[in-house]
Length: 104
Image (cartoon, rainbow, N blue to C red):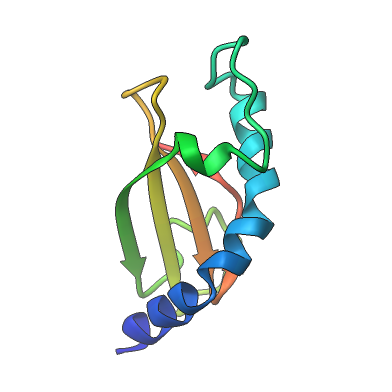
């Protein structure tokens, strides 16, 4: 039940968190050399390149990279890019806050 509430809360504010997380996603793509050098990925166009692939909801902090305490709710949204099928960009939300972006 707590997972459903946390996910609903996240989706109610999706425009807000998309704006906040966009620069972090762009930086992750740049640092990890995910996009080809001739493609300019910015905070304004990053979402046009990403395709939602999966949503994971966890009761605990098992995928929170040590950022949260035991018993917190972690939601991770995985996005595929057009440049690689080998990894997905994961955006974690820990108790409604944006966590550290990672890939798997």
